[in-house]
Image (tube, helix red, strand yellow):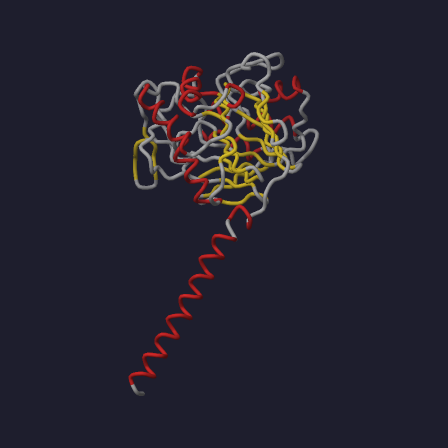
Length: 334
């Protein structure tokens, strides 16, 4: 083959390869995850357990919320005391007997304490009620020094005795179209949102005892036409880590709302300023800080994000967020 012909062939192949690459890049841009993945069109989240109570229900040191996505109900955490979520749901006129799926964000008793009672009582109306609980790897590891309540192995035994099953995962999963469970959230940013009073316990991992950074901490992410809605139990993995992982799992999209506990009640002014700035950079549009977020911490986050009062509130029992109406903080936290 002479040199001019060989050169012409190489030029032709180069142009062809460039064209293919250009089309691939265009396909990625045009077919963004927000276009390709299913979107939840109707979403409402109602808090059923947290410390602040309004005109209906009772407060406690715990967290639970009912997620209603395109007509499907999911219970996110179950509160601390056995009957709190049942009592608050009744006071708010919410029927829970059709809920089959439960998510436990992590092992602590203030999130798992109501699980067995909920299953026992609601199964009287519907045999499948609260029968399937989704957890992340590490939740059943031994924590011999944790004084905060029944260990998860004890909860597991009681729950399975009355017909409940646990589904344990180590990776993200799409539970329903547009509804994602993160599984354990990687710790990229140095958010140490765990422990209390500067004390951190140990957990018996398969490789031996390690610092208990709550490795199973997971969140729920709902993909909607307005962007991602992120639900956090305590945010022990760090709320910024969680948001960034949500983008990695689901895809690039605006962050329409972040709700739940963020475990910032003991955070320093510097940590709160950093968190607020990171939330601002990620252009979070709505913020509901409940449970272990801390009241003062929520106000600092409001300042840091620059969000208006109606878009950054302290979560209360009965408060809700929906795509249609946004945040309804009720009266006390308005």
